[in-house]
Length: 58
Image (cartoon, rainbow, N blue to C red; front, top):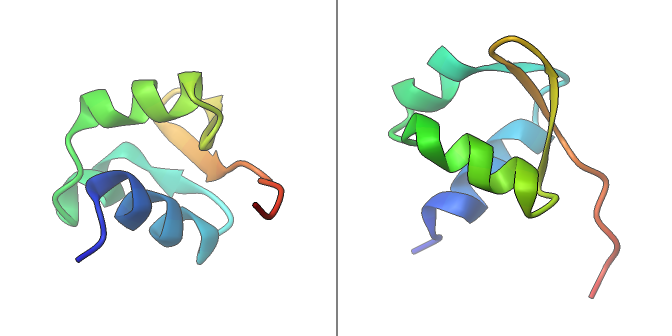
């Protein structure tokens, strides 16, 4: 079962821009979004708007 971080990142990768309400609708708490931005998983595009960060393959 994927972690909340993995679930949020996969969700964002499927879309161009994702709203905070889209994440909360699938069970991702809002505070995770700030953490994910700090860790480089998401990029904040504007107030309540996020996109998946481009990540290098491990």
